[in-house]
Length: 139
View 1 (spheres, rainbow, N blue to C red):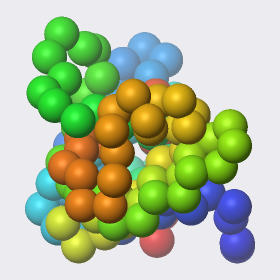
View 2: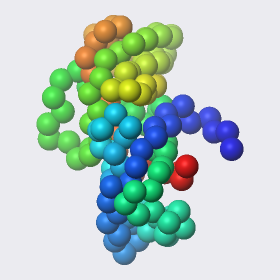
View 3: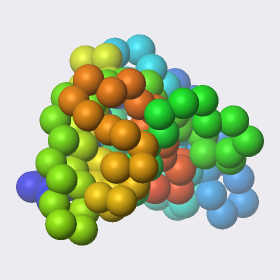
View 4: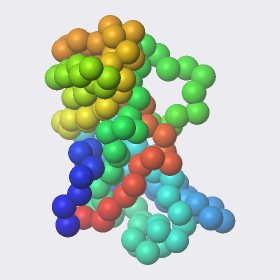
């Protein structure tokens, strides 16, 4: 199956914590960083997720926020430090490619935000992703 989602990160499930309706799934990415996905418990059961399972974490580029400094006081679980490798400034929107360990993320943000952050190729950033915006696919 082909998907339009640009960000497809391979990893391994390290923990599944089921709740009444939702489950959190902890995934160790191939570079060693961890990502948390909050998915329905039914989806976790249907996918047969358990520690050791190979998965792909899927994140739409529009669901990634960028920070140029520490992001304290936020409920966002996923904070992936990296550096901007490519920056395209459109009239309204900007596309930033961010290298994180052995993977690359694409973030689409407003041009105004990119300018306010002072982004440039080589900028150190933290990619922020809410756990509810991470989908999982089995390999």
